[in-house]
Length: 457
Ligand code: NOJ
Ligand code: NOJ
Image (cartoon, rainbow, N blue to C red; front, top):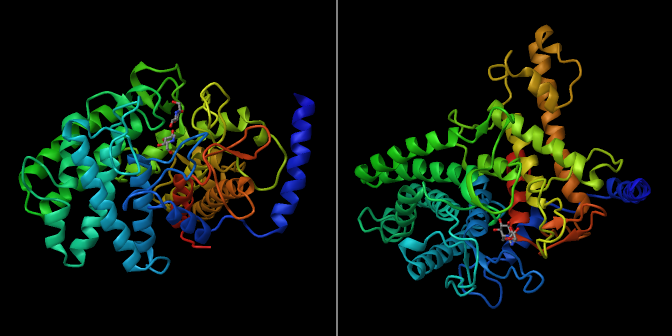
């Protein structure tokens, strides 16, 4: 093992030297382009987002509700961030197609089965065996569609919104209302997690369910559906009570699943918790970006992966560790009998998280209760600077957080190919990519981290 590690480091060093000299391989532009290539590719219906173009080993040529909602959400964010990277016409046409496909798929599944995670590229529900229901799907989809509805309302398109997105009537037949009603009625039900493997109640699912209902209540009010708004807000309160149970004070981190009833045993230390925060936090005090519990969980996740993946032990430059889903993972991108690897979406989640945390670090938010954790996160040795010169301390923390976030971007860049293509995973020993190629979510996660950074390079 020692020899092997040495070889790995040497190999990495050579590659790293060439990679620092050259320009970055992944860019906002390349990731956005590859992302768009996976929206309605040849052989699919309009509005379909394939998880990957790979049709065998593994076959990811399907429309996953979760992946698609996240991808379309990112596309909207790209447009909303300044509008230059994508024209309004192409954004609107992609969104209208997506809305139509959502309606079709919801209708095919029926209200009771909106937890279906996976659809054929025709829009019909997948009918093979799968981990279902996955109750994050309708919530993530509602979050994306609500953002779109608000955008249209600002443009004066109230009629389209009422007709096609949120009709304030029951039974709910319009896409947003249908998803919100489903979330409100089913949040207590067990389902499968983001990784489609274990059944129970999941932190990330509950986080996005809460956000969907909060944003849904705001939209309902705008559309004169006050009764529904009140109902959604009641459920928000209930979900908040559930969410509090995920913090495990003995372990010192937020657990990904509680009340697990099937699937493998796990430590429950899982990047899905950070994803849940990125996708679901509304930064109003409950598991906000700069909540100590969230920060502590991020620190523990980084530590565990820094130690278990050989590629993270190789001496390199400013790269942060490559991050996986959870330490006990055995899905290698092809089969579950393998060894888990780092994933691009997990590594980008850390980048996005630290860019976000940098924004929140301020003289008001860094205090005597949390400054040590900030020091630990950015490996600042002279932590007492805090008491001597607070402005200097905040500056150092912000610089440190940004550098850390950049390190995760550099890590992903290092493992991408020469044209910035990214698959699902990178091998834990040698670092080459594996699993589904051109994973759409990998690109969305990259773009989303860069939007958080505030740069489109
Ligand atoms: C494919 C899933 O999408 C992945 O998350 C999972 O680990 C494997 N199947 C095994 O269930
Ligand atoms: C496996 C991942 O675990 C799951 O989250 C994802 O939805 C599917 N692959 C499709 O990308």
